[in-house]
Image 1 (cartoon, one colour):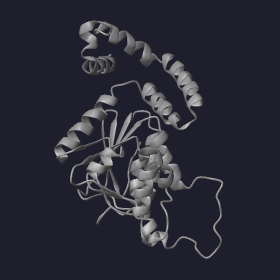
Image 2 (tube, one colour):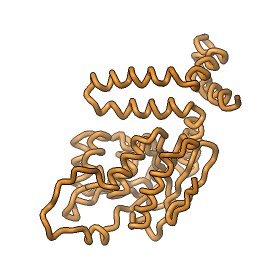
Image 3 (cartoon, one colour):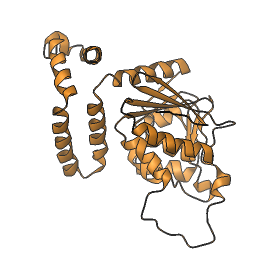
Image 4 (cartoon, one colour):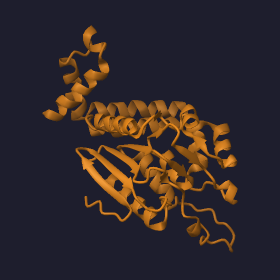
Length: 282
C-alpha cells in the first residue's frame, strides 16, 4: 500500500498503522482532508497486513475541529430536500472505521467537533486527556444538525438524553464528563501517559489472530440488532473463529503456557500476552 496523502502522515510498526492528521491551522475537515480520510479508510480497510489503526493529530489543541463551514455553505439549498436511497461518502467513511475487520482507536488530545467528532465516535475506542480533551457538536447552533452520523451514533454511545444535551446544547463537553458518559474509554493526565497506554494497547491487540479481531468486532457491532438476532449471529461468528488456524494454534499455546491451572488463571492478562508473542514468533 502506498499511503501517500496530503493531510495525513502515515507510520507503520508491525501490524499497527498510525495516521496523524495534519491540516493547519486548526485541522478543519476541508475537502482535501475529507478526500484523504475517504481514500485512506478505503485503502487501509483492504490492507491485510494491518490489524490496528490509530488516529491522532499533529496539533495538540485540535483532533479535527469540524467540517468546513465554507464548503457546507456551497451545498444545494435552493431546491427541495431529497431523501437519498444510498449512504453519502461521509457516512461510508464513518461506517468503514466502524466495521472494518481491524481495531480503530482515536487519541483525542484536544478538541473534536462537528464532523470530526462524528468520525471519532464511529471508531472503536477513544482516549483523551484530562483538562484538554473537548467534544462539541455545534451544528444546531448554526441552524443545521449533525448530518455525518452524529444523531445516530451518539445515542448509541451515551444514551438518548445525553445525545440530546450534546447536540441541542451545542456546548463543550469536557474530558471527565465524556469519560463518565462512556464517550471516552479512559482519560489520562499527560500526553506521555495517553501515548503509552494507546500504543501499548494497539501493539497488544496486534498480537492476536486477524480473523479473531475482525469477527469479534463484527459480533460486538451486532449488539445493535435485536437481542435474539445478535445472539444467533454471535454463535455463527464463534463457529467461524473455531475454523481458523489462529484459533487452533493460540488455544493450544494457552494450554501449554498454563491456562486452566491455578497459577495461569491468576495472571490471565499476562498469559494472553505470552500467547500472542509465542504465536507471532512461530
